[in-house]
Length: 273
Image (cartoon, rainbow, N blue to C red; front, side):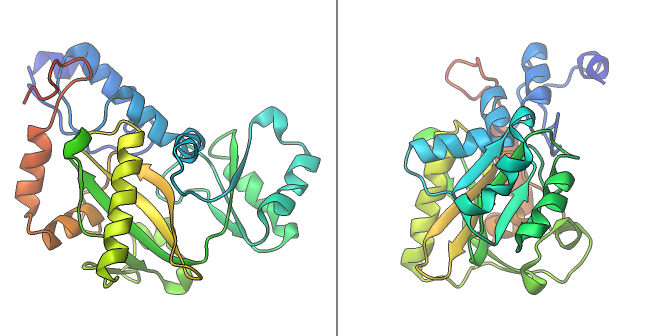
């Protein structure tokens, strides 16, 4: 595949890959070596955003709200350590692999007895383990486009899933999930969420585009950052095109805008497109 890239003399790459290798800095690093400008975040930001533990550490250090969590490396996953997690986070809680997307391997644990099965599922996808406090409220997502001080948030999308189960099946294979954009949130609330998302995007060093997933806690309407997607979906079910449309940006114009932002980490002044 790398040989084909060099042989066919591509001038730019539009990255539409997700998950490991496509979104974690690997493909980005290969394109850096080939000096082919590409869309989206660079090597470091892609790698950090793919790792929810590292992402949360950065956000927490900067005072950006994200759910309380416990992370355990393989050598820290003793039965005693796992059993102690509910004491720290309470119940229910969320168990997930820290370097997967699309809700793969995620379990909502409601009882202490359910913790064992949830951890076993998560470590099938990642040897490390991430557990988070459960934030009860509305699930939202908000795209960002642009770089640095010019980064701006697009309209918030509110997600209404059956029984709150916005899982892999519902994301990609059913029409049971309802997406609301405009979100219907009060204007001040939407603006506060957009400001939080732009700050989260810039904190990780993202560029080009991205999409943050958020929980809006029901009790006090406080938004909590869950993760940053640096290569969001562009399918018929995807949310960035939906949000862009609400902002008056057509699918075609969005694609052109993203391609025009293609660059390399070491490109002086950024944009080479």
